[in-house]
Image (cartoon, rainbow, N blue to C red; front, side, top):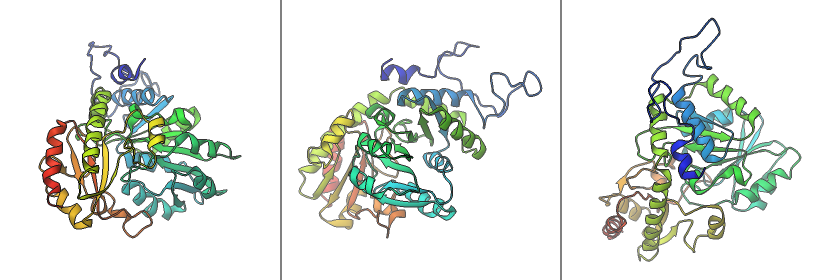
Amino acid sequence: MKFETLAIHAGQTPDPLTGAVMTPIYQTSTYAQDGVGRPRNGYEYSRTQNPTRKALQDCLAALEGGNWGLAFASGLAATDTLLRLLASGDHVLAGNDVYGGTFRQFDKIHRRFGLHFSYVDTTDPEMVADSLTPATRLVWLETPTNPLLNVTDIRAVAEVLKARPNPPLLVVDNTFATPYLQRPLELGADLVVHSTTKYLGGHSDVVGGAIIGRDVELGEKLAFLQNALGAVPGPMDCFLVLRGIKTLPLRMERHAESALRVARFLQSHPAVERVLYPFLESHPQFYVAQRQMRNGGGMISFTLKGGREAAVRVAESTKLFTLAESLGGVESLIEVPAAMTHLSTQGSALEVPASLVRLSVGIEHVDDLLADLEQALEWA
């Protein structure tokens, strides 16, 4: 089935008891068993399994082209669970432009338990190859990255890793692109991670995360960790993400259509120093993005000639763009990453420019969004 059909039907069938078309919210913590140690259809406790969560997991697996999917309470809960596959002394190679929460978890938590992290420009596969060590067990990519929107050639990095005798796992955070724009597993990735809070949920009303893969043995290990660690979403959260996924293709087309117009407007504005958007011809990885992604998505970052002060003024002057963290909802958001989502990188090699502004372009009428930015930029 095509993606648009899978988004509506994958993992979801009418309820066998009532015929309900929408997946029921199984708001239960436990299940009656047919005998001692004989759970009905494998359901015994909702931390271990829940029908609403199973529907979401099966849907996510289908959308990413995986054999299995696991849902979590947040994107960072998914990241934490995935890192538990590793042991003290193992090395993780990550991109030098990752979400601030990811960097904080790597640097402030997992490093204390003996994992080693280094950061490299993953847009250059040769730099990735040169940065691998005998202890490298995992390579972590974001593409496009948060917040500088760098694009990594997933297939090229996968080929670098597969050429090694004991290849490390290749993990791709696909939150910005979503499976509608790119499918990392088809490009050679081993695992895909999502914050389902963002575009998959799409309505700024739920927090969640996910891991999807193809290797069955790896899936069983992660399912064990999911149950043992217990960072699972509730059934209402799963229902909301499933609801959001049904309109994902339509929303991503509108996000991208408006974002490209906004990016071109910003590119021509005298107060703007640089615009970062994957489908702008000026983007350094424009051709990689064109080859790897269906469209440029809804995220834009730009720097202002007036520096930090101008960035703060613009972010505080919009009327339609809401000053807030997060992204991927139907409403447009604006933020200054250095002071908000990426404050944790301050003073590190991953520190982002103080003059950087990040936009999550929503699905409002683009003319209204342009007018709002135009009046806000007057303050720059």
